Length: 216
Ligand SMILES: Cc1cc2nc3c(=O)[nH]c(=O)nc-3n(C[C@H](O)[C@H](O)[C@H](O)COP(=O)(O)O)c2cc1C
Image (cartoon, rainbow, N blue to C red):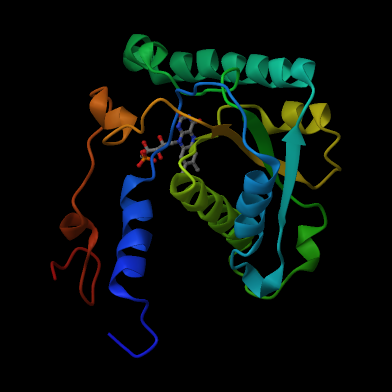
């Protein structure tokens, strides 16, 4: 610990938000107060980004017909994903993988156009733009948990079709449909674990020393 550390309760709050953040798919409608939404978006916008590129663009979905069109895109992709999963198709179709119709707020996060001009930190790793956008989403996710709001990242959609729907310019790309809002309760563990779809690996299995695969 250094002299720059937060107080014990402040540190506990940070770790608590990290531990209790969940990808939520069940929402209770309602609304997100405008000042809360503003705080959440400001938190997202404070994320780190490669070369200070700030490649994120947030589109708040207001029109019900547009929300429904996004729902239909997600539904289309959900069926295609099930087909691609083969023998796990039926189990996949039983999972709830989005809360687009039920959440209080729907946001789309897209990568900006003209990203090829940003070379700093991306010459060999162009995907650092997406890494930066993901940092913004994680900030939003954690801040939402602290505010008592659930959030779910939905990536089941055709980006070209969603881009057309939202007038995203050529070169831009939607990466996240975010369902945000009040929830009845936060899942006590990842829903995919609770549903028996996947298992979490312990950190120890993913932590190496000096060489890939070498146990620490
Ligand atoms: C980039 C990204 C895309 C995701 N896309 C979806 C999705 O389309 N549908 C879904 O139900 N969950 C999606 N998730 C949520 C993951 O399934 C979830 O994070 C994981 O199961 C762990 O659960 P937790 O977030 O509650 O810890 C996505 C998560 C990330 C980080």
